[in-house]
Image 1 (cartoon, one colour):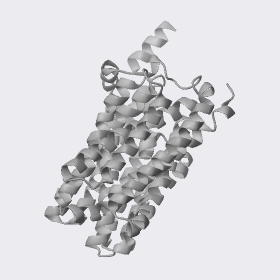
Image 2: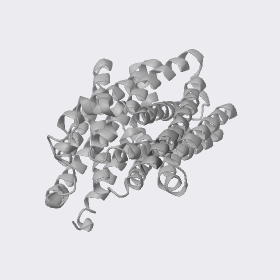
Image 3: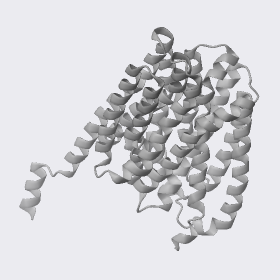
Image 4: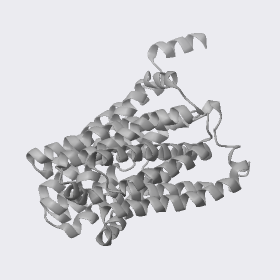
Length: 407
């Protein structure tokens, strides 16, 4: 098939991730306004992120049930529509219990959208999965970079709830464009997109996935990286605004993190010549060190530099892990994406309320410090994974002797 005919669809997937990147910064950017609106503590505010992540974990079942039964490109369109519906629910500023339920819906359809886009990119770029993932998540990082600034700008003239309404409308407008393009390119795309039964997976496939040590180490690595990233995303803006008392720098602190993440995925990951686990090992160690230094500086410039450096050093962790998951499961890229994502979302359930509770008890700096502790553990498991993969590639003495004897 002529790959040039697929190209119009790939940029649209990237643009979807850009919008999703902007949307992902809404909670971290608006958290102080939401806390004030509902008169809640940080631990309660952290529950909003947890319910978002609970929904994301639930998305694993959605993907498992429908992938292989409904074409992934159509399922992506449905998930975008339902994500817009979840954002509309939040825009009504409902009672806190309904708000948490709304965030869980956002998690389900956002994670389904995210997983399907990753899987589709792996299908459409089979020879360059790692490059495709780094580029895709780099575009997401650019959305994350601009998200806090855009959302903070909107929040100056709109209430936090109307900001969510604006995001809902943006996804609906995108969906119209996506539907037109999909109809135009359908015959070309179905040839290469794994939409048949082989693309689906069930519980037995997941069990087989989890029986491999390298898969477990992969999931532990992304779990602790999730704790590192989500903690910074949720609390660094509040740390600058409330603890350092520099409100004007809050959005820039969050944006500097995403600038580092975007550059990490677009430039650092493709440039550095090392195995993916080794990059993750070194990057997360550096992330832990710079976040610690930024907190010790107790200054807005210090934490901005630390946020940027943390993102730059470890921001490539997610795309590199997802690329490994897809490369190890080429015929079931949805599973190779979704199972590691489940570990990531599980961390995102636990870390925000835990770090928020620590902040309530010991002060906001200790909330942010959870990021550094998580990065250390991410580095530890990435190092073990690197050693395990090397050991797999090295013939064992007994096996080598048998091969020599039979040779």
